[in-house]
Amino acid sequence: MYIQNSWYAAGMSHEIGSKPVARTILEQPVVLYRMQSGTVAALEDRCCHRGLPLQHGVVTGELLECGYHGLAFDGSGRCVRIPGQEKIPAKAVIRSYPVVEQDDLIWIWMGDPALADAAKIIQYPWHRDPAWAYKGKCTTINAHYQLLYDNLMDLSHVGYVHKNTIGGEPEAHSNAQMKTTRTADGVHVIRWLLDSTPPPTYSAMFDFKGRVDRWIEIEFSPGAVRLYTGAKDAGAGAYEGNRDGGLGLRTLHAITPSTPDSTYYFWSIARNVKLDNQDIHEKVFRQIEATFHEDKLILESQHQRLKQRPDPLVDIAADAGAVQARRVITERIKEEAAVRSPSIS
Image 1: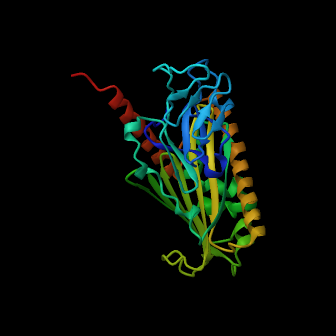
Image 2: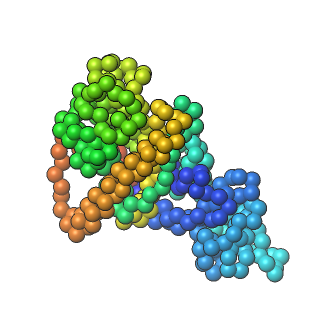
Image 3: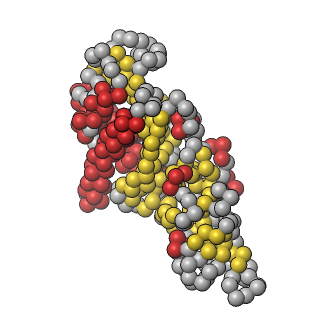
């Protein structure tokens, strides 16, 4: 069901401190915590002594101490202290996971540790670029992770589900110019809404003269979808490649499967205008959060109906990006399965 050998978001940097945080990732119980040195560690959320989840423990310096009998584990998962005895059994070890903190996110590798190449983590410099202001959050969606990808790769729904915030005219989204391309590790989609009415969220941030040319760029790779959206006065050169002087928004959608029925959704919104305006900062965040709650309602309802009636569904032209993203995921899962179970000649 899942790509194992891939980097997944496990937390936002501000979420992970000295208090253990429990997450279920790819159906595996994980506990994350920040050691005294500042480094984040991720261990199997289960003490090897009597099985208590380590989320109930405490961090003492560089160690995570079980809240039941005080066994202490280092960041590699090895038990290094047992109260009342000097000898530590060789089997007193739990699984640890490779983790990397980058761009204000904690990334975890759930597959073969030998294949965990930090260079393959997606780059998201807009979390640290002073030319952009951002805010983010983690939301749990009680739906299968694939539905979240479908939702993000087909944005024709925006004019209907989000008409009061980022939507605008439904017809403009349905009739958008769209180009879908497979990339080395995913899918790229670009949509243009030319000569359209700016949606309310856009108008709250930027003074447009009237109608706008609006772009939506979608980059999918397993684990995340990156969106670059924005608008410029109609006919002012955005379509020809000059987006300078317009409104730009970048949204990160890091999608981490939890169970077949739930998904962690780590998201952020960054803008390139009115960076010091705290009122705008909070207003934009609240409006984007509201759109994600609209999506949450749709996705969770859709998930429940599909569990009841998993009949084949009909694809339409707007699904091109979603169809390609599903193919990428299916191909990766098959490739991993082939490596685990090589054919015998």
